[in-house]
Image (cartoon, rainbow, N blue to C red):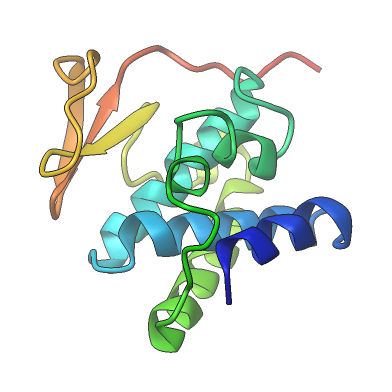
Length: 153
């Protein structure tokens, strides 16, 4: 399955919240399929925290496809998601993360509290790499580059 097809499906065919679940699953797959369960959960958490802030968009799909923020906007649209086992795990992680994130803030299980960004040192060296480090899980470092607050309703 090609990334371009997944992104088209999520933006043109699927209703919410199914579209966001597909976008989050795709992001977990592209960013962390070779990481531990905890690392995958942390990636999903960052995307959900960003969605809640409204700074990168109002939906998970808008957040993860915002220019140069997550893999869906960085890798080639011709990228194929070819590992069915990793895809299945990514879908489970995304759905579990969405369920967890739907709880009131004090009841959520947070893996990387306050993390607004993450990076894999082997492939990225952004200007904000020296921000406050929340955690390192696998080869990803999770950072609080900015304090994200849920937008007011």
